[in-house]
Amino acid sequence: MSETPKSEEAKKGWLSRWRSRGDQASETPEPEATSEPPEILEAEAKPEGEAEKKGWLSRLRTGLAKSTKRVTEGITGLFTKKKLDQQTLDELEDALIQADLGVSVAARLVEKLGKERFGKEVTEEEVRAAFADDIAEILQPVATSLVIDPAKKPHVVLVIGVNGSGKTTTIAKLANLYKGEGRKVMLAAGDTFRAAAVEQLKVWGDRAGVPVIAKDTGADAAGLAYEALERAKAESCDVLLIDTAGRLHNKANLMDELAKIVRVIRKLDPAAPHSCLLVLDATTGQNAHAQVETFKTMSPVDALVLTKLDGSAKGGVLVALAEKFKLPVVAIGVGEGIDDLRPFEARAFARGLMGLA
Ligand SMILES: Nc1nc2c(ncn2[C@@H]2O[C@H](COP(=O)(O)OP(=O)(O)OP(=O)(O)O)[C@@H](O)[C@H]2O)c(=O)[nH]1
Ligand SMILES: [Mg+2]
Image (cartoon, rainbow, N blue to C red):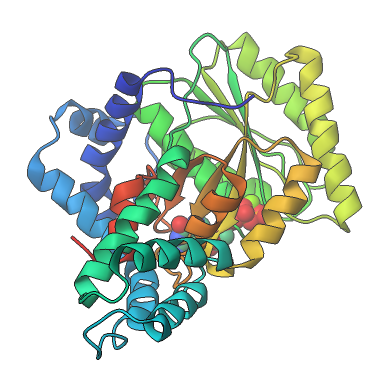
């Protein structure tokens, strides 16, 4: 079920299209519900200019500002001595751990720095640049995109995660993205537990101009997912995004419900879901590790989306997650708007985190 890009070409095209339209849209108020996506198509046709790319990077940096501050504050101030000594290395390691990069990543970064620069003169900027390179190396293998297989009609994406992590919002953002790429998208309101969850998805569906298959609160989520897949197949949709509840009465209930959704949709398509995205809220920091562990036992997780990087000082956790779980990170959320989803790019993220241009 793991999704890897078909080709570098495909990935690049998708990333640049996404980047090229990201900025203008996020600065403007959300559009009213409309069945036409003229803004997106118009922006897509534009070639990606340097200015647009710069705008995108600066938005990433703005989003990461709190995380960057946390990481770099720990590093700044350690460089009163000219030569790199053991005490400075130890303090750097502590600073990286404090910034949520995790014990293992912190040790790895500091060990490498020590090997290369111990006893030598080194500036704070050089250390940040060295760390950024090493972080980019850790992130590179997981920085990928969710590739929709055009042979699947539909490509089924199951979206899971704890309550409030940003599942429904991420589904809306993805629906908007895929619709903008000219794909036929359908949404399934599989969170039948929480009152208002169905309404929330319907509002987003209207905004993105895509149909939402829904039932009343309390309906059987697996049955709903089955019906949605039947409809999506009949209508030859390209993508079906299934929302799920983040919390039920207890963990066992949630596990049963997710397992049942998977079991039931496989009656219609034995390979479904073709992608299972786990949505994590970056503000939860280290708790994200436990969430990955838990959800992996409930459903086969193919990839991660990290949300709320704009409001988090704990973006460093993404590096720790990449190193530990090696799960692809297919997108990051940098705001509440429908366009506030970004492809995850290793080098840009690493340099942003270290406060480098
Ligand atoms: N700042 C910011 N807020 C976000 C982002 N993604 C989601 N949110 C907000 O987080 C809150 C929860 O998002 P939802 O999409 O409803 O989360 P959920 O996982 O569907 O929650 P449940 O349905 O309760 O399980 C909402 O207020 C969203 O607007 C993001 O990337 N940045
Ligand atoms: Mg939700």
